[in-house]
Structures are given as structure tokens and as C-alpha cells.
Image (tube, rainbow over the protein chains, first blue to last red):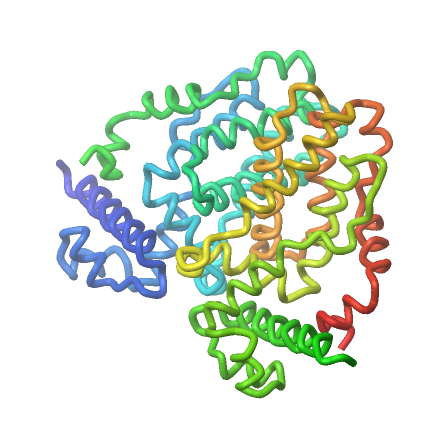
Length: 220
Length: 220
């Protein structure tokens, strides 16, 4: 392995460890020592990549804005569905995503680092705008407003599912959410062609390159 | 004022004070002394009504499950819309509601007290079931599932609006949410009759009995 590649892997391993610690203990309570212990790297390695606990937090938040695993599709609206379905599937499986959610919802952490909700809104609004240009969505659909509502609803599903006494499968809840909102967004012929299911998310996830899964520590 | 009425008012004033303190500082950091100071009651009065900080938290959570201000309507679906619109309008105006949201989202507080999301889901599912019996909603609508998605989306809107850099008006976001989901829920003739607007929420709020507003400390 060339040196640069090793550095990328080390950085990723540290971020994954930080995410796991933030996810379990919250940003406030977490310490850099815990991250060091979990990452099994030297203090020097950690401080080479990240200057502080705050820097680790920013790295985790940035790492959680990801569309990895979403494939180009001739329907832009399917890509949008895939982004949120796959994210729901990955959330309980990847500490990077759940730590970022926990920090966005935590008032103190949010004061320090803000949230990545504007980035998500922008990303979804871009897909909706493309979909509208192609005639996939109703002409009156406001891309930014609709994107923001989708970010709200997705975030709410992830927060509420976690806080309900019974176990709810987030991917299945997000699929139901799409079944409610898509008729108001998609042109009828497009609506009939969209695939919105837990299976779709599971397939996309299974097809993600193992290299990425290994690098993020999921296969360990 | 008869003694019992005074006791009810004192209890309410203590709960409102506790809500304000929990809302500002979080459950963990809040102290009973701060609640005492804010409520301007004696320690004896507080402990007559509530045995502990945890008891105050449970009181706040219970107090936040409220449909006050929602009026009977010949369309049950309008009542459902009114519940969530009015709640959105009240949330930034009533510490009892925002404190309950903050505690439901806070992982530690949630571990101690659970959330009231199941109560909300049940309440909305009841309205949806009645609406279905009256033919107001599509026959295939699953009342409980749809209610749960609405609770998710509403909660997400309230959490995300608070965390976005620009000021978003929650009531207006919830109205937009309904515009997205109602076509998939309401029968077409009913859909055309539903009133879903910020003005509707403001009118319902303005019509709430002043007695209740005074008792909850809003007019002070």
C-alpha cells in the first residue's frame, strides 16, 4: 500500500472511531482518548489528521453527507428516492451517519457545528430541479421547498423511529413516506415506474463496493 | 377564588416554569431551585404538587399532549389538519410544548421518560379512522401507519426548522407538508374543502379562551 493510501485509510479509521464514540456518548461527553483507544492509532497519527475533538466532529458531519451507493438512473426522481431510501438503510448500520444525526439534533452540538440539513436540501433540490426539467414532476412543484419538506420528514422518521417503544424499520417508514408524498410530486407515468421499497434499498446497499465497506470498517 | 381553583393554577404555574427551565437549559442541567425561582412559589408548594425534578418532567410531557383550541368540525380530516397546524403555531409560543419536544429528542431524557409520540400517533389514527368511516379518506389508507408518518414528518419539521440557519416558520412548513401528503389521503371532494393555511392556525389560536392562555402564563 502506498503511503498516501495508508494515510487515507488511517484518517477514515479515526473518523469511524470518533463517530462510534460520539454516537454512543454524545459529543459533550466523548473524549479524544476514547477515540484513540477505539481507533487503535497513536496520538501522533490522530493529531496529524485532526487538530481537536471539534475537528473530529466536523469531519464526522462532513462524512455523513454522502450519496455513495446511489447509481445514475434515467429517472432523476428514482435517484432522489434512492438517496433517501439508501440513507435510511445505512443509518442504523453506519455510526458515521447516526453520530451525525445525533449531533444535528443535540442543541449544544448544533450550536457549535451547525447541521448539514442545508446541504441535504440543496442536493435533493438539485435532483428535483433536474427531474422537473425532464418533465418527471408536476410543473408546479417548487424544488427547494419540496426538498426541505423531504429533509424534514426523513429526519423526523429517523428521530421518531428511534424513540418509539417498538422497533420500527426506518427504511420501511421512509418507503411509506414516499408513497404518501410522491403522488403530489411525480407525473403519473413516472410515478408508476418508480421503485420504492425496502428491497430496493437492500439491493443498492449490497451492491456498494466492498472496498468502501472495508475502508469504513463495516466488514470488521 | 376557591382553594381548589388556586391549587390548579399554582400547579400549572409550576409546570410552566419547569417547562421554561427545561426548554432553556435541558433536563439534565435544570435544577428544582431554578424552577422555584421562576415560578415564584414556595418550596412547600412545589413539593406539594411534584415530588421531584423527574415528576416535573413527566408533568411537562403529559401537558404537551393537547388538542386545546381545536374545534369540532363536520370534516374529521379538517380536525386532524387543525391539530397539527395549531400545534405548529403554538410550539414557538409555549415553553410547555417546546420543552416536551426538546426532552423527546434528547437521548438521555428520552431514556428516563420515553416520548409522547405513541399518544400522538393514537390520537391522529383515531381521527383518521373516523374520517375513513365517513368516506373522507381513500379506502386504502391505513390509519395507524399514516398517523405515524404524520407524527414523524411534523416532528422532523419542528426539529429541522429550529436547526436551519434561516428562520423558517413552522406553521407554514407544516401547511406545505399537508399540501404534499393530503392528495394521497383525502377523497378528492374532501380535499377541495380542506382549509390548510397559516391563517387558519392563527385564527384558531386567537379564538382560544383567554382563561386558558392566562392560566398557562402566555399573556404575562
